[in-house]
Length: 133
Image (cartoon, rainbow, N blue to C red):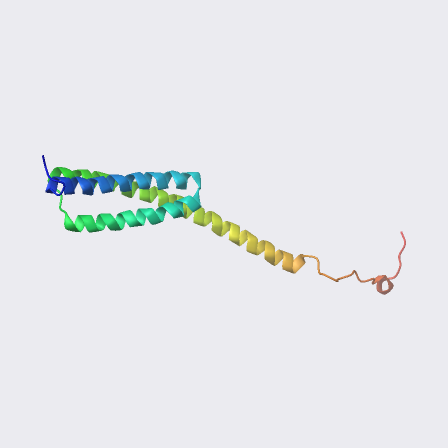
């Protein structure tokens, strides 16, 4: 039986970290699809911590060929989900941009044509004569 610090155990720890990252990525994709932006942003910070941890693990531990192939498959899934998350984020950014533009146009219209405080209609009938039908 291998010790806790054997190369096989360390390699399995690296793969487990990538599997955990995939699970976090899947959760983030579900949040993006549901439009739960606050939870997505919160989970993204955990994701970044995991990525940094994996980066350090990768630098310290190489993988044999079968494990490297498994890592590549996990990375492919993670990257595909990342692209899908980004697609949702871009759509949301565009939606927010449209809302902001609409709000700005509405404010400009309100300033230009909205009711003026203290303004009263001017009686100009004496200038045009009183024409009764």
